[in-house]
Image (cartoon, rainbow, N blue to C red; front, top):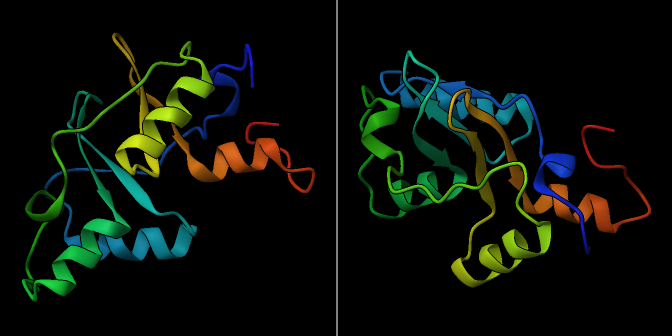
Length: 134
């Protein structure tokens, strides 16, 4: 994976929601799109958080589901990010060390431009599927 940069493997565009999106709508989006997370952005397109399948597992395990909950109720706000020029090996190491499956890719001026996931990295390593974008 030498000289392979995040921008080459990241998924883009990403599914985004606002903090005031009902949590069940975000969950439906994740199921409909077959994805493990949605990026939470403000009106300015800047990252506010991430909501992952793991967040929903914690909600269920702790039995703290509220039918009127919004994404903001459950999202992770202390989000580790990367940029498109980071080396994939470094991000893969970070993901293994921290137990992450999704790392948003951000640009200072554009905000969220993509996401690198374990699936993106696995697809690159596999002979079965080409990474997105092709």
